[in-house]
Image (tube, rainbow, N blue to C red; front, side):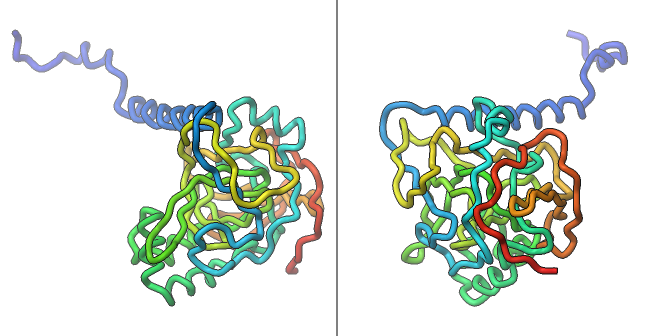
Length: 282
């Protein structure tokens, strides 16, 4: 066997390293979407999913609510156009325009109050950091790097609670209108009504049994899963169902730097109007 190094001609036939890395990233994203389809379509067997209404304390809350407003929104999945966008998979990338709702210049969650709660109870802060997969020392910076918005569809997540000094974990569906903090890939990371860290959902055995809260519009067929955007986002394109306006909220901001936007092409349509008028700041 020859010990000579490969010739330039032989190397030329290989794909560049960056193409291989791109393929790996794309493969991971496709796998995430496929898993979302899989767990949504499980059939037969046992398992539990806890339903949590938008304004409820929820299961095993970490903190008191820091949500400034919650509930009252109609699911965009009631709209035929939204269902067509979601397709059969019901998984939506975090970059989808109109995936989230809100009020321009007004945050639906008080991030600084959330930080104060954990600063005042370092045990809970450490537990939150462990569940979120971060170092406790960066917890304040982590929370300030998230973006407060409201869900526009009932959304499946893994919820991490706090009970008797320990972290709990359970599958959950958060009601449309729930105030959440999302990361720079557009995925929900904190439920503001209870301070619980959130993660991507995982499969349960068989068809899950729904427990917890109930609401009239709940339909398992219209529950969505948010998958990470392909790249880091600079802003979240938000819809205000109270007045039909669109705006952009820079990632890691709480409304002060919101800017008006035109209705984006693609993404989720405006959908039904909100059933209440959110409080506004000018």
